Image (cartoon, rainbow, N blue to C red; front, side, top):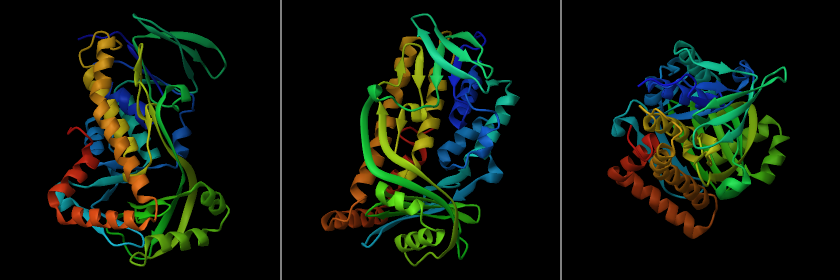
Length: 382
């Protein structure tokens, strides 16, 4: 079916916006992408993404898998600090190439940009796009260029792939009073593609294979984060080492950063001629690395729902998309919230229950397989 040019406008040319545009282009649409940042901004993006095997499958279909920069996770050890119980996940048992991959965001964006160019997709950088009007037939955006000139763009659908969720649109919000401290750590011996998810009384600590190093996501209280940001690297190293235990020896850290953590769920992910995806629809705690993988499934589901649609902003199509995404969104939110609230404490009874749960998970391959596949593919198998 033929579609008019620019029948969908996408706000945000980060990894999610570009992936959404490519997924839609594969289904016959011709989206135009707007981003307030410069084209070079992605080169300074220091984020490290934990991508599931399911996300790799989707990115390969989009022609945007940065294979040379992706470090595979072949095993995961889940444990809790100071208490018994642990479980292992590995690729042999799950019969996948990897349980996940660690990819610098800038390299993923570069791969997506190259694929977008190959598809002839247009990205308007240094350009702000703001919803101006939406009705039963079309939507319009006010476009502000770098020189402050204005013009209007009319479109059938606006896909919001960046931005925060306004308080008035929040259905569920939880402040964990936690911050993620991020850094790169060098192990004394090769990590052999083993990732660690370590639950501590202050929150989870993840060590993710990243090249020959580890990408560290260290959850601490907001007050402790304030103190640690002014502490020397040696203090970070000592405290991370104490939390992870003696079976891993770290020699140094670098590339420190911090990020506040919480849970926010948008009450409605669709509206008249609008759809919100990724962090514009839901912001999750990074435990178990669900956030960006969930966002990619948002993009894929949207493209799947709009396949063959003459009017991609039709209310029935948007309602179908929202309905199909609801189980995965709610499941990921409940899963991460349960992990954070159940494991971020040192209560003896809860610690014993957690230990028993980890032992049961380690002893029951079918249950372990269910958890692994839920993390890899979400609520749906692609």
